[in-house]
Picture (cartoon, one colour):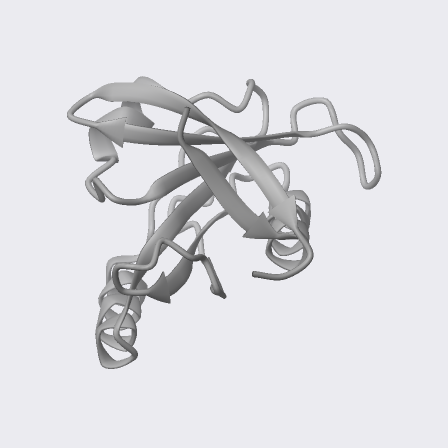
Length: 142
């Protein structure tokens, strides 16, 4: 089974963003060096839809992010968003919009959580409409 290896610090930042934007869905990217598959730079994004059931990257923000990653020789290693009322599993819309074949798609569900309560943190690979869940390994450092 494929595995996403992520630092505790990045894990905590993604969860904190999901909780902060609740009840709207949070979204963002964790960039890393091209070809390494190692998430390093946390980039929280604005949910342009400002919706509890849907997320959408602002097109200008996304263009800026891709130019920035290009300048830094980075690629999106993790694309994350939260589900505020359902489990951490990709919706049909999430699957349809998954267009980074090498990325890990992380979902955090804040449906049953409060500031300190339980949450789901799950990672998937999504290729041509096929969803494969992967293990998540949290480490102190790479």
